[in-house]
Image (cartoon, one colour):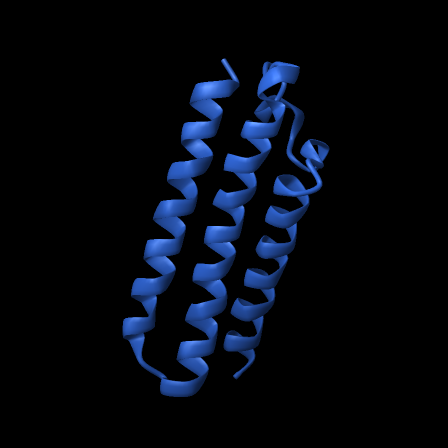
Length: 100
């Protein structure tokens, strides 16, 4: 039970951080080396991609925690893996494309 609560809580934190980066453009939440070379023109799209990546990771965690708490099925790991891979892919693409 405690494990599911922690997974859901971490998922909610990632979703909130993603929202702050994406919608509020709070780029300073990230470590400075992640956005040091992002031009002001690309800041909005960089924040969008980064925030969406964080939110995907958070949604994967949130859904995983909820499914595990209801079904106790390890197949919920699939939602975590999909969310994590999609989120990290967006984060890496944003960094490679705009922070060079």
